[in-house]
Image 1 (cartoon, rainbow, N blue to C red):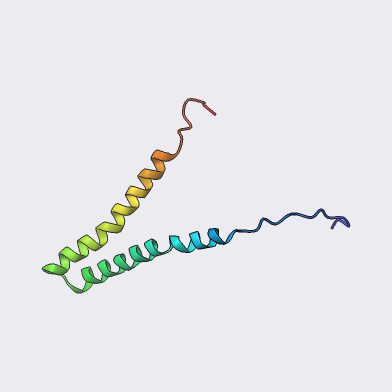
Image 2 (cartoon, rainbow, N blue to C red; image 1 turned 90 degrees about the vertical axis):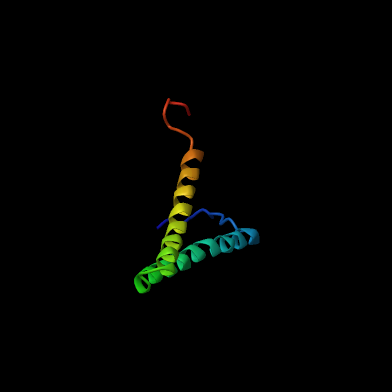
Length: 84
């Protein structure tokens, strides 16, 4: 241990950053609930409207995930070409 340790400044987080983090949670929760509904409807109802509901409820989170991954992938700059 050093007898003299320099003070390390701790950045304070603004209040808006914590509010922004809370604003992120409704969509993952909604997609999780939709997935649970889709799995239960596929398990409990095997005919008619339940089959269509399970397909729709399980397809929507998959489509949202693929769209977000593609958007992030297109936004990331390419490392090819040696540009820095």
